[in-house]
Image 1: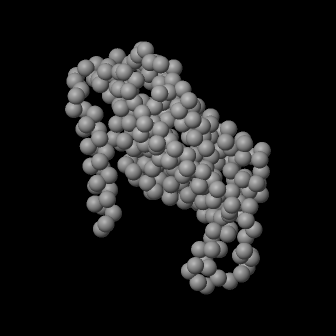
Image 2: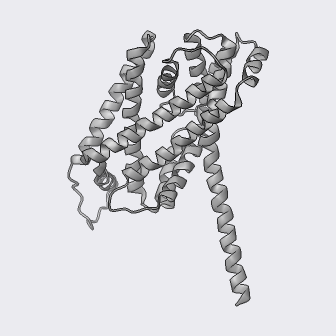
Image 3: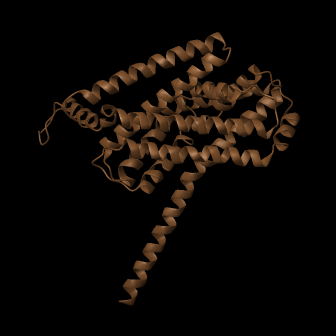
Length: 325
């Protein structure tokens, strides 16, 4: 009962933020800006954003413990399900779906899936710090954004410290040891989970994971750049990096499905900071989010459709064989 009012408040906040963006905008002019966008640049933006999924699945594949061998296609399927759920349901539902999908689709177990997700968030956190550092160096920032960047860096630093500590701490729970108490079961789960953080004990693998996370950020930044080019606007070279940095801060926790309202409002404010008219800023924000959602949401549904059709075909073949025998 308590969850519904909370979700309603989140939606009201997102809708209010979006409404504030629309108050001073001529919607007719904004629509004219949208329809004059170059489709080739928009398709390129969708391609760049689609590349994120391939790199993201590669990161998950890298973060698996070395003793576990899983086909890459199953990792990609689980990753696409998480991407779709993260962009359609509020936090932390999407992440829970990702853990369940990886644990069951890739058959790696829940503790391994939790460790992969935690490592994934850590790598993304470091990559976001890199992007925000570039923003702070090359862009004249508002004071509040500078403070938000500092807070984000501190939070990621604390998270990284805990992760590295758990990775290098020897597990206290022995295999086969019977645990009956609730706290003991939690301690056992954490101990088994920390064993799978071996990536943090391998400098080469950790560096490769960090590189993949940076490539993901680069692909998303290129998608933002391509949308800007679709409208032929004369923006500074640092504009895509600034937009990316602001979105990293505003969407740390996806409190609304697909970050609806939060994403548009943040991008709108950043583009106005860059000197664009409200109509151009709104059209860019909407097109940018649309080009991001098409591959990030659509891929999961396509994978699900493919798996469903393949399952139906296998069942029909089995029935055909049984009828024949």
